[in-house]
Structures are given as structure tokens and as C-alpha cells.
Amino acid sequence: MAAAADLDLTVDRRIRGPSWFGSLSRNARKNPVGALAGVFCVFLVVLAVLGPQISPYSANDISFDRLTPPSLTHPFGIDHLSRDYLSRIIVGARNSLGIAFAAITVSTLFGVLFGIVSGYFGGALDLGVSRVIDVMLAYPALVFVIFMVSIFGREFGTIAIAIGLILTPGTIRIVRSATIGIRNLSYIEAARSLGATDTWIMFRHVLPNVAAPIIIIATVNIGLAILIEAAISFLGLGVSSPTNPSWGRMLQETRQYWQTSWWTMIVPGMAITLAVLAFNIFGDALRDWLDPRLRGSR
Image 1 (tube, one colour):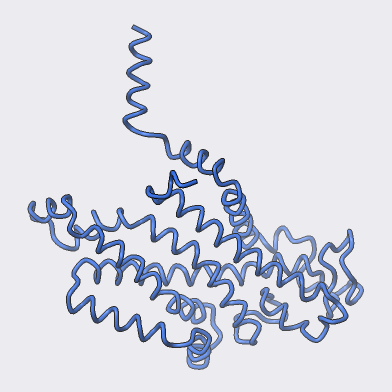
Image 2: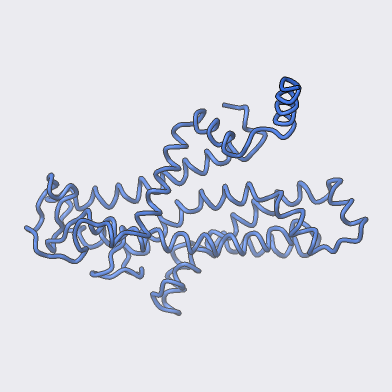
């Protein structure tokens, strides 16, 4: 009886497939670089949330020796205003990552809404959405953000919405393509034959089946949003200020000291580079994990 029960349990596990945690562990072993990038991304998020509480010094403490190179006491050195660079990197993560995540929220909401609707209905609606996307893609990203900031001011919400709108066309295209691929499948036709409304079908049947590409494009776009925010802050148009740092502004403030004090360029530049690289590698790893066509390719 015990052997039969064990056999039934084994068969049941094979039918249901591996658990979510088991699948995650297996893919982490297959792609350790992607797993490491994911851990680093989580670390950056924690850094952004708890920055002021975990920084070794206040970001605005000016009691140190000016332009001191990296040392054991100050691993990232001291800037031109006698402030600890490590503390400013930690505190500045809140602005750099906060705007990036807010922008991804905007782009995901608009991208999912218009992508599913245009892909599901097709026809003139799809053609109209496609033409709007072409116009948005033709407009330079930085020019659009500068335009928004000039009209509505250097507010957190303004910059997040501007960056989010820049990233929206790519999200719409991905979601639209995935929706077109499943809109005529048998289970969609079955739902229509049972009298389900188009709204119910889109959000009950289509949305869950396009969730994987949505998660992937959102993760990859976070890196791009960080890069755009850094460029805006470097131009002096971000929400950051001398007492409210961001990584891009840290580069802008110290550009005249780069030749004599190399760490003022390397430290914030590496923070931006590692953050963008980590989210891109993690997005690629998510694609391999969530896309069933790629699970056995590595």
C-alpha cells in the first residue's frame, strides 16, 4: 500500500510538472549569471528603499577632507564639496531607481492597455495605434523629456510620465504581437461561443497568456529608464538637487574634476553601468525562464 501511494504521488507530480520554486532553482543553476544579476537587482531595490537608513554618513555631511581618494574609511572617496561618495551613491539610488520604476509602471499600464486592445480587435483601431506608435518612435527621447519638463516643471511625476511615454511604444508592440498570436486560438473561440464579452476575454484569457513578455519587457526597460534619468539629471533637468542626489547629477557636478580626481567620474558612472547591465541580464534570464520555447536551449 505504501509503495502504491508513493507511486501515485510520483505520477501526480509528473502530471502537474515541477513546482515554481523548483523551476526557478533549476534555471538559476543553468544560468548563474542571470541569477546573480537578479540578486543584484534586488539589492539595488533594497538600497533605494532603505538608502538614508543604511548609508554610513549623511549624504550632505561636509566634515571630510575635500577630494580625498578612495580609502578604507571612505571606499568611494570624497567629492569636491567634502561629502562621502559611498553615502551619496546609496542615497542617490532612490531618485535614480525610483523614477525608473515609476516610468516602467506608466509604460506597462499604457502598453498593456493599448497593446491588448489593438491586437485583439485589429482593423482600423490597430492601424491607428500603429501609426501613433510610429510617430512616437520618430520623436527624439531627450527632446520629448525636455519638452515635458519645460511645460510642467521638474517634478518627479512629470519626469516619470515623460520617460514612461518614451518606453510605451516598445511595450505596445510586444504586447500587441503576443495578443495577435493567441486571439484566434481555440480557447478564445470557445469563450466567445459561450457568450463571454470582449472585455472579459481580454482580461481573463488574453492578459494572463501574455504576462510573460510583459514582465520581460518591463525588466529590460528598467535599465533604459535608469539611463534616460541619468542623462536628464546630467543635463540639470532632473528632480535631484545638491542636497538630494542622483547618479546622473553626481556626474554633472564633478565633471570639471574628472582629470585630477578620477573617482568622481568612475564611481557614479559604474553605478549607472552596473544597474543597467544587471537589469538587462536579469531580463534576458527571465525570458529564458518564462518562454517555454527557450527553456531547453541552454
